[in-house]
Length: 243
Image 1: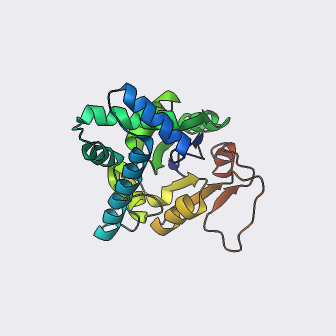
Image 2: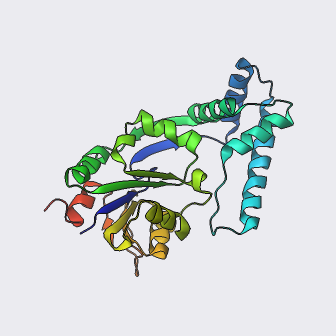
Image 3: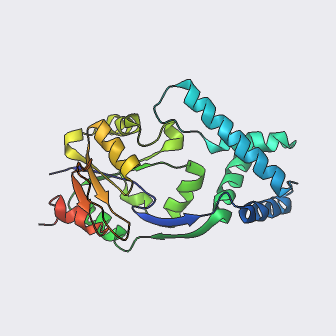
């Protein structure tokens, strides 16, 4: 039925928990920075980071180019370090961003049925795409770490495209770049207000993966398919890949 399967990443294929805003995290990161030769008091770094990130997001929203704009976190880091007298290179910026994410990471793992689902689609000759609300410097290392990169025929990360789900333009960029027929495409994700709402707005069928302990049936579902128990294997069964 479908030729193109577009996946969300976090909460759908990857189970993740991070701590990027707590006092404890900023203390650990500031301590790590000092070992790298960057002198920051943790409260000062947190204040700069949260303020400058908000300024970038406000500016992107005011530009009005997208319904749901996205920023590049590297630009935030460059301003944060510049405010403390450091002129960091592009390579240093990437390293600092990647380390920020690693230090904030509590756990990261594939869901038990992720690879079986992706391998089943590949075996059936389907095309697989990733549409993720994420920062490249945070996410690419996690895609490589979990071995997911080879499964995708195309990867779109919101920080690269300046917009994110549920903005239908993010879906449109994916379809235009890879010449996907929307009628032959389905979006698989675990977020109703992001993955499913965006897919509906873009004219793409949605497959909702319920990751909650219970499932609440909607009176007027915005998705075409649902796995009530959060099983990715139902993507294969319900869309006709297996049987």
